[in-house]
Every structure is written in structure tokens, then in C-alpha cells.
Amino acid sequence: MKKKHKPNWFFRCLYLLFFIFISLYIALESGYYESKIAKKTALTEESIKKFENDIKEGNPIDLDSYTFENHQDYSNNTTSAAIFIGEKVEKFMSSGINEIFNLLKSLVS
Image (cartoon, one colour):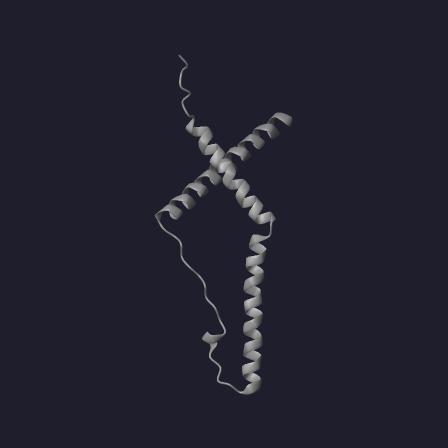
């Protein structure tokens, strides 16, 4: 009778993180973010043209009709925790790398 192979959760999480990394990398390289920024720029240029036309025609000017504020706050406890953990990991890794380089420097000199 064969033993059942227990799934290794560490490698499953590692594969998932790798898949997320590859997905984000492909989105970055394909120009997804640049196209979103270009679209916002196009909207701004349209607003400038509309503003200039309203000035030429003497129409009343209302600032709210030319500006677009699409800021959405997505912060919650999960994102706050993720930011906190990310900062701690960054601090730990930076100090560890600095210690390794200091050790190598002391060995070389």
C-alpha cells in the first residue's frame, strides 16, 4: 500500500507568490499601467480644451466641471497589517544584508 503524499503548504504558498509575481511582472511589461496613465492624461487634455473653449465663448467657469477626482481609499486592517509586516521585513533584511557586508569587509581588510 502506498503512502499518501502530504501536501507541503510552504511550497504551495511559494508557488502562489511566484505566480502573483509573474502576473504583476507581465502586466508591468505589457504596458497596462502606462496605458492607464495615458488615459488619465488624455482626459486632462480634453478638460483643458473644454476650459479654453469656455473662456473663448465667455461661458461661466466652474472648476468642478474640469477636474476629476478619482481617489478611492482602499485602506483597511488587512492593508495596514501588510504594510506593517512589509516594513518590518524590509528593516530585517536591510540590517541583515548590512551585517553580512560588514562581516565580509572585516574579513577582507
